[in-house]
Length: 573
Ligand code: DGT
Ligand code: CA
Ligand code: CA
Ligand code: ZN
Image 1 (cartoon, rainbow, N blue to C red):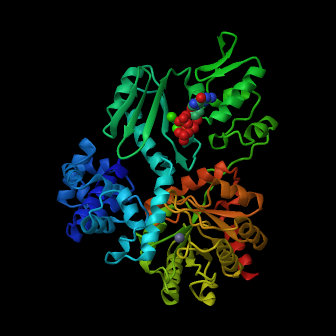
Image 2 (image 1 turned 180 degrees about the horizontal axis):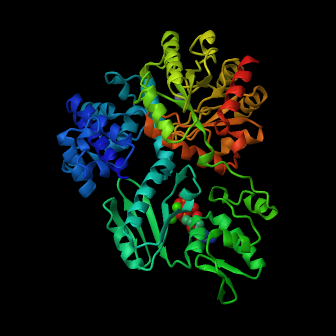
Image 3 (image 1 turned 120 degrees about the horizontal axis):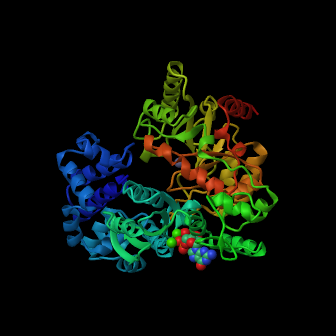
C-alpha cells in the first residue's frame, strides 16, 4: 500500500503552493486528492494497474499523471520544482501546531522570516501580532507550539510506522526471495511511537533480499549495508532495519529483535539458570543447538507461558508467565462493533449507509453513529432538530437492515463549565451519548477536573470520549486529575473511551492501566470520519493489550443484547 506516500506528496505540494500564494482552487485540488487517496479501501497501485485512477474522487487526468510519476519514482517533478523555490525552513514551520501554510506565507512575505528560529524571535519580540489576522493570543499559541516541536522526540507515531512497515514487508514478500518476513522491535510491541522499524526475514538468499530492500522506491538513503542486514532511511520519514537469517535461526532472531531489551535480558538470565544459552541465533545447551520451531518453544524451554509481544517490557509479565497467570488479552476478533463514528451529517466523508456497509464488511454486529454537536461549528455540528432528524434516519435504516444494528448516538461537546452542548431531554432519547472536550483545553487542573466530573454526573452521558484530549506529538493531555475522574466513572458505571485513531490513542497504555486498576469499563472506538478509519481499531486494541486488557472489560466486545441492556439500564438510573 503506497497510499500514504502518494497522499504525502500531494499534501506537500498543496502546502508549498499555498506558501507561494497559488490560487486557492489549485491548493484545494491537491488537498482533496490527498484526502481521498488516504480514504481508499484498496492500494492505489491497484487503481493504477487497472487504469482507474480517474475514478478516485478529486483525481482527474493531470493528477493521475502525477500519481503515475510518484509510483514510478517516489516523487514528482512539480514537487521538486516547488521545493527549490520555497525556503525549506518554511516547511519546518508547518510542523508547529497552529501554523498553517497561510501563516507561513504571511510571515515570509511580510517579515522575511524563513525558519523556526526566526519565527520564535518574531513571536518573542511581539512582531507577529502586528500582522493581519494575528493577535497576542495567536502569538503565544505559536510560542507554545514551537516549544512542543522542539521537545518532540524524533520518534515515528505508531500509525505512520505500521503502514510504512507493512508496505515494505509486502514488497519483500512479493520478491519471492524470503520464506518469512515479520515486523519486530517496538512496533511489534505496539508502542505508541517507535524509534525505528525492525524487520526480520528468513531467506536462503540474504544478499539478494538485501538488494531488493535497498532498491525500494521508498528508500531515500542506504545508511548501512552488509551481506545479511541493511538500514535505510525512507521518504518522507522513518528508518528501517532489516536482518536476514536462516530458517533455523528465525524464531530466536525474531524473539531477540522484538525486545524489549529489558525483557531479553531477563530471558537470557532465566536460560543461564537452566544451563542454557539464549541469543539472537538460537537456544543452546553446551555447543548443541536445541530444536526450536517458534517463539513459544523458547518460552516453554524456559518454563514460561508464551508472552504476547505487547507485554514484553519487563513490567511483571515474566513473573506472571512463570506462575502461568498471564491474562487472555483482548484481540481484534473480539471486537463486535464501533461505538463512535462520524458521517456526512457533520464532518465525516461517508453517509450512514456507507459507514454501515463498511462496518458490515468488518463483520461487526453493531455500529453507533455519534456525530458532533452544534457548538463545534467547524464540523457543522448537529443542533437538537437535526439530531432528531438523524435519529429518525438511523431508525429507518434499522427497519431495512438487521446487520449491523445501528445505534443512534451523538458525540456531545462538554462546554467549558461542564454542561452539555445539547438539551438533556433530547439526549435521553438516544441509544448512546459520548461526551467529549473539543475546546477550552487549557483550563486549570481544578477547573478541568470539575468540568469532566460534572459531565459524568449527567444521567444521559454513557461514554467519556478521548478522555485526556491529547493529540500524539502535537497537543499534550489536558491537565486533569485522572484518578478522580476514573473513580467517578467506575462508581457510576460510565465508560471511558480508548480512542483508536492513530493521531489520538487516548487513553494511552498508562491511562488504560490506571482505568483497569480503578475497575472502569472501556470502549475501544475509532472515531472514524470515513470507511477507511474503521480499520484503525487495531491500534486501539494494540494499546489496550499493552495494558493487559481482557475482552470482558471492553463493552464493544459484548454481544448486542448485553450491550443494549447495559446502556439502557444505566441510562435509567
Ligand atoms: P525503538 O526502536 O527505540 O522504538 O525500540 P526498539 O525496542 O525497537 O529498539 P531497537 O530498534 O533499538 O532494537 C530492536 C530490538 O533489538 C530491541 O527491542 C531489543 C533488541 N536489542 C537491541 N539492542 C540490544 C541489546 O543491547 N541487548 C539486548 N538484549 N537486546 C537488544
Ligand atoms: Ca526499533
Ligand atoms: Ca532498530
Ligand atoms: Zn471528538
